[in-house]
Every structure is written in C-alpha cells, then in structure tokens.
Length: 366
Image (cartoon, rainbow, N blue to C red; front, top):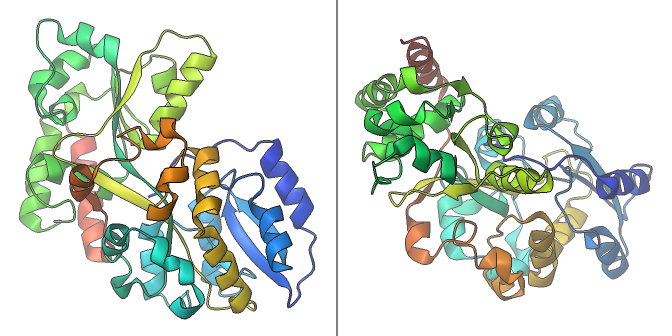
C-alpha cells in the first residue's frame, strides 16, 4: 500500500539540494524517503545533536524505491517503504535485522502497532513503524444525501460501496473504485464478515459475487481520486485517508462547495504502515540506527506528524501532536476502533494471480 504523497514543495527541493552532494563517509547516514515526509527541522536538529551528515534523497513512487532495493547496491542506510512491499523484500533478503539494543526509543512505540506489523514482519525483526493510516472511502456528503433521497444513511457504511440498494442510487453522482486487487478484495472480505486477509477460494468467490452485483453502478476506477472528489466528479470514492483529506483541502482552497468526509466503517477497514528499514548493503548501519532512534523520539516524530498530518505509532508522542490532528478520530481512532483495523499480509504469487483473475472478471462484468 502507498498513501498519497504531497506534491514536491520548496521544503522538499531545499532538502534535496542541501543534502544530495554530501560525500560518503563514516560520519554520514544516507536516507531515502518520500517527498515532504519529515518536518523542516528534522535533519538540521539531528545533524547538530549527532554530529553526523545526512544525505537525504527523495523518491515519488514505490516502484522507484523497489528498483533501488532489488539491485542489491542501493547506497542507502535507511529507507522508507510501505509495509506490504517491505514484507516481500524481507523474504527476498533485502534488509538486515534491526539491532534493538541500539534503539532504546523503541520502548516509546504502542505495542499494538508492533503486533499488527507482525503480519508482514514476524517478530518485528526488520521493520520499524513510521507513519500509518487507513483505506476506506470518501464521500461528498451533500451529493450522497441528495442521491439517496428519502433513503437514510446505512447502519453499515460499507453498504455505500457494496450494496446495490445504495449504489444503484449513488451511481447518479458517481462511484469510484480502486484497481488495487488485494485491497479491493480485502475490503469486500470485511464487508462479508471475513478477515481482510482471507483469500481462500471460497472467500474470493464470495467477494467476487459482492463486487459483480454493483459493477454496473461503478463509474470510474482510480487509485488516487483526489481531483475526482475535489471537483465533485464523484460522490463516493474508495481511497486512502490521506487522499480524502487532501481532496477536502484542495476543494476548500479552490473555493468549491464540496462537503467531503472520510468514512471509516464501524466494521473496520484496512490499515497501512510506512516503515523504516536498513538495507543489507548499508555501509553505515550504526548511523542508520542513530537516525531511526532519533525519529522514535516523541518530540521529533510529533513535529513530523504536525507537518504531514499522518498518525504516528509513538505512544509517548500523542500528547505533543496538534489537537486538531490527534483529536480527529479518523486519523487517531480510539482503542476499540483500532482493534478493527487490519493490516494486509504478504501473499504468494498464486494468490495474487487468482485475485488478478477475479478482479478482471469483476471489471469486465456488465
């Protein structure tokens, strides 16, 4: 899973220009991260406190990161993949184990997140959680209510995307689906009362039947429907939480009358993690641990969350996060809601092939 990333800004450009030309040295840590995914003072404060020089490079897609990782000579000491990709790379022996003795700030993490991350990293041997969020769907509240007419909002919010009773009405204002097969079938599984990661033959068949029943009501397929929501082109869109919040901000900035909300169904949904990991070919592993331990400092990671508006898994940082962020239950859900969030596990090739085949059957159904 890869959440929406903000477009490059002067901050990202400045960071890249100020650090790209640092020389390889014992006093260096080479970091490879997404655009605009740290605070303005993260690097200078770390350099001042540690005496190390940070070479900080940016990527804008997980495919770019993957190409670096699979060569076996990435040149980086710390990378920031999404957990589902990182789980595959663990199996490919891409990362070196984390030395937990060098990360005293690991104690600051909420154990619940470490437990969930074990879906892709058993024993938490290779990955350290950085930021996290969910995938469900966004709605244009006013357009949805208008399309439904006298029909009240469903008790099970998933009905808005999976129940023909509702989708047959919402198609008038537009429904957008994702093309990410594992994510889509995981959501259908949750709707059908099954574990998100149950991709057995029977569960996939049941999910496919659920999807086929609403196929005629789906207007468009888009994995990042920010503009679709912001412009009012659709009223319901499966999306990462970050995409929906960006759509809401974008509509407001353009002074467009779109009442956009992110919906986390009461049944639960999927959660994603972005993580920190040390490539096996790292030449500065000790410095990599220093960087990661610094990010695990509550003040440091809270400043990052306050900048990027994504939740972090650091329990000690909660009190330092801006209230408008930490007080939003769709970004920081309570303990009961958190229990219903399911991270996606790594699947084998035959399962992926089966899901792709099922998705194609759904998409071509009329």
